[in-house]
Image (cartoon, rainbow, N blue to C red):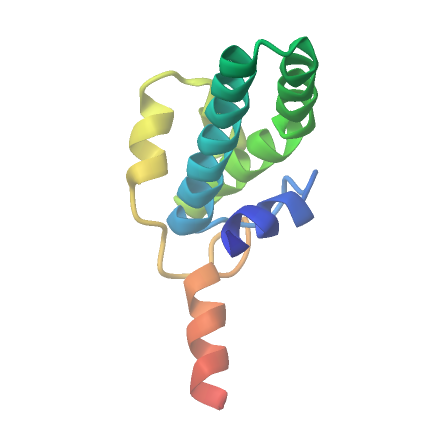
Length: 118
């Protein structure tokens, strides 16, 4: 859940890099919440829940695109690769570059170096 919240905190941050874990945890929680709202609205037959689903989907649209762009940056590609249908899935599953690239420092390296200082 922390990874989901981290992606939401970087609401419209299209610069930098996002680890695979951040991207996929955001994706997982987004799907769980979306389907949960849809199933709940179908079971209870409450039109208000459909509106909550629509508002939620619109609310996470920009963070979803932003975390996807940052994920493309982690593998050393431009954020525009997110619109290429199959290739973006391959890139999202690919391990990021272990060194700094033109989009910023290695997100894994920051955490590991901080742990080594402690």
